[in-house]
Amino acid sequence: MLLLISPDGVEEALDCAKAAEHLDIVDVKKPDEGSLGANFPWVIREIRDAVPADKPVSATVGDVPYKPGTVAQAALGAAVSGATYIKVGLYGCTTPEQAIDVMRGVVRAVKDYRADAFVVASGYADAHRIGCVNPLALPDIARRSGSDAAMLDTAVKDGTRLFDHVPPDVCAEFVRRAHEADLLAALAGSVKVGDLGALTRIGTDIVGVRGAVCEGGDRTTGRIQPRLVAAFRAEMDRHAREYAAAVAAAS
Ligand SMILES: O=C[C@H](O)COP(=O)(O)O
Image 1 (cartoon, rainbow, N blue to C red):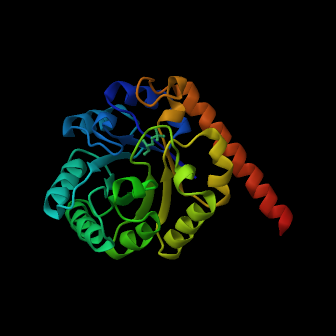
Image 2 (image 1 turned 90 degrees about the horizontal axis):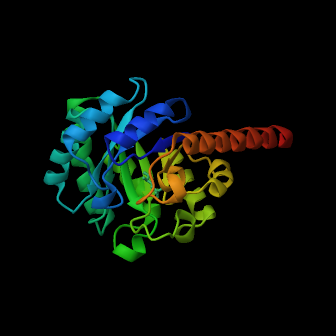
């Protein structure tokens, strides 16, 4: 499982750089503009320069409206600024068809510019609270649009978590559908260390966190701490080892 960490700006990205050996992807966002709030192009560029070259930089394009042209242009902006993972939060899409429309535009805009860019179609575990597409529709939306990964995060950061809205057995179905479509499955949403066992067992490819590696567990007032990133990674590795041993023992 890959670890994606979301700093809110250049200073926190420098803290991520200190913990670079423990994480896999640095994800630029602007949390005060929403769960997948987009940051400025120059911030993406500065963060790209600040983190080791072998760590991919991801950028969120925002909690986007159903405006395929606008979103495609914004996604290209993120790619031009140095992000190789482009994440789109399909906030304003109320049907799978709308979501596919948006993601097709993003895939074309980004991959015409950089063929090896990695496009992530993100829905929301708490979709019922905001009226957007159902979480289990995301793998098919990602597949039909030519995206590389399907993701879930939470839209409302009020302390409720991924598993409060989409329990582990439904997340397992999400991962199964993503893998069946040859996509990576990414899960986030106030994930805590205690969720890592379940996320490992269901085959999650990428786990995204912010709050869990911020001081006091607070994604808004706390700042990312390199020691918390290291501790989170250690727990991920422990679960991976234990799960591999259990699978080997059962076979
Ligand atoms: O992409 C991952 C998100 O930034 C997760 O943030 P969170 O763990 O605070 O919900």
